[in-house]
Structures are given as structure tokens and as C-alpha cells.
Length: 497
View 1 (tube, one colour):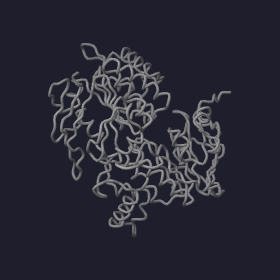
View 2: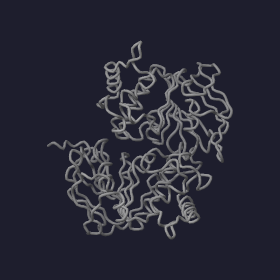
View 3: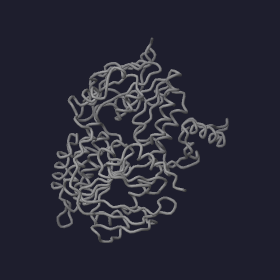
View 4: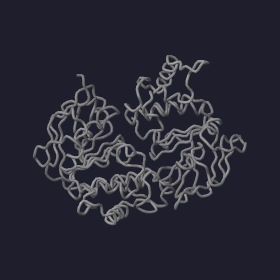
């Protein structure tokens, strides 16, 4: 049997970093090969070389036994190699249909777009994934999860022979994940090869035929999925035992710090009330579209149409903007680190000190030496992997970018910490480091609100679990009464009753 794709002795370096060292791999027809490793292991770099986004310093690529050169994404697509990017590679001001068929538009001989046909075909592709998104919707009006599904729909609309998926389920619901897996099985049956990057080990065991494990830019092993387990995969990834995945330390919960009463946003959120105490993690669960991120944006001053009352330390406060929220001792690690958490064109030090710039100023002038000093302390404490604090944030792996976002808000020494999907798209070791950081926050008496689509994460790290369904708060459970079934029952509750 001729392998669909082979990569031989691939090497790649960036300034100050050896990204890939002598990597060789084979992709067989009709299989799911998971590429597994910590953030910064080189997974995305290797896949971007295959997809024509980056060029290797050395090495060869073979397609169906023929030595080929891939110098651009067009070259890759000519061989039927397509990539779904973790970063979302959509054009925000175009419609869903235009994005799905970008570069492959339906047009007449004279160059006019056949809009009716394109919308109909886009709707057919979306229906394959059981999506009800209107193909005329402008992409910038979609949520992160919806945008991710449009990326997947675009890939499925091509005649792909090799499909690369970089964290495709990071922002989508369990139901959407199941639908995606059904589509993957159909693609496999038709001979399509799937290269799949994921940090979700349970998902890896479910979907993969083989697992290609990387560590520090090198290949450390390839295993048949039916002959391994998650413990062995973790050992290969990190080079050691990782310990308990959710190292939750139950803190002594103190007095109420933060309270919301009767919060509403017309058509989005309906009469929501909850409170958080010192030393507590209040987890928020719910399906896509339930209103979790909208709720976090609202309490941080991001929605002027909000009604309701907010109390901090039993004192009613007015929060009309994120600046007001910061002044009242709140911090907010947003869902989309690239879009709203970081300035990608800035170096690490400027990002880390962004929310606490007064710490680095003297007589209204910025003390750059102090700024670098604070950034270095934060990088060391959070174990950010980068050459130095002047490294551009855009060059960091997802896990290290997330640590920079956390470092930025930790500099503010806030009392109330909102974490929206804090471990989305990062590796198991970085996740554990963030969980230990959350433990440190609660031990210091901080009140933590954590939104997550990963129910085991919510169960592993929370004292109580609040559940939203269609903009309604359907229940708040003490952790002793919370499990996957009770949470899903509340998350799917019909709020019209």
C-alpha cells in the first residue's frame, strides 16, 4: 500500500528557536493520524509546512510515492491537501457562503457571481453538519464556535484528499463534535486521510487510528491507538508522569465578594442572579449560544444595554465600561486570546504590563526598565517559553500566549477574576499549570468565575457550578451534586416552560 503522504527529515528553525528536528512521518489512506504534543512541540509548524504556509529549511515531501514541492497553499490544494486552522482563517467582513467558497465562487462566463446557487450550495454544506447558520450572515457577527464550524464546513466543501484539522473541537459543543466525528468517519470511508491536532486525550482515543507524538520539536513515538492509553501518551508528551489532571485544592471559602442581581440583556440574558465568595471557583457551564460569554462581557462593562445590579463587597457599584470594572478590582481573561486578549504585534513585556501600566510609570513617563523587570518576573512565574520578554506575542504557541494573557491580569492584583475558556486549545501540561495558578488565586482569597465547555474541567476545578440555557440561569449546583448528567439536564432545559 502506497502511503498518501510521507514527510522525510523535515527541519525548521525560527530566530532563536529550533522548531523541528529531523521529523519523518507517514500518512496512510483513509486513516485519522492524531498529532499530539505540548504547546511549542512543533505540531502546527509541521502541519503548516505540509499545507504550504511555511517552507522547511530541509527535508522532502512525497505524495502517493512522488516527490513533490509545496511552496504555497495553492500547491498544497492542487494535491488535495487542505488545513483548518486553530486561529480561524476567515474573512470577517464577508458572508458565510463567501467564506465557504472563497476562491471557488460560482460565476458566469462573464465573471458575475451566481449568488442564488452559491447560497444554496453553502446551505447544503452547512446542513451536512446539522448547522442552522444563515449562509448570508456576515462572519464577524458569528461567535467563535460558529466561526469554527464555518471553517470545518469550508474544508468539507472541497475535494480534499488530505485534511488537516488543528484543534477543530476547541470551541464547539459536544453535539457539534459528535456531528464532526460522523463526518470524519464518512471521509475516512471514502479514502480521505485526516491529520488531527488535539489536546483532548479522551477525544484522541475516540477518533484516531494512530497517534504521532512530538516533544520539543522532535518525534518521540507513533502508537496504534488500540494498543495504548492516555497515561502512556502523557508520558511521551511531557517526558514524565503528569500527576492528577485536575489538582484542585479545596480552599476555605470566605464571605461574599461579588453579587449580580436580576441581570438582563434584551433578547440575550434573562433575569440572572448569582454570587461568588472569596476563595471560591464558580464554574459556568452551558451549550453554545447559552449566553455564558455574553454574561461575562456584561458584568465586565462590555454591554451598555444591560440592566440589573452589581455588588462588590456588599456595596452596589456602577460598571459602564471595562475601565470601570478594572477600577473595582475585576480582571477578565476573554474567550478569544488573539482577538481580545492580546496585541499580537506587541512584544511580551508590553502585553503583560498593558492593564497595569501605572506600575511602570514615573511622573507620567514609562520606565521601560521597570516594565521589562515586571514582565520577566511574570514570565518566570508562569513558565512562559520564549527567548526573552521582547519576543513578539504572535510568535508564541497557544499555551504561552494564554500565559501572557494571565500574566497581564495577575499584574493588576484584582480581587475578582473572570476566566472564559482559560485552557481552550492548550496542552495538558500547560492546562495543569493554569489549574495550579487557579488554586493559588483561591488560596489568596480571590473570587474566581470560570467559564468552560469542558464539563470534566468544570467538575474538577469548581466549588459550585452555574448552568445557563438559552440565556436563562437554570440552576446552581454545589459540587457534591454536580455531574455530567445533572449539568447536561440543566443545559438542555426548555426555558419556554
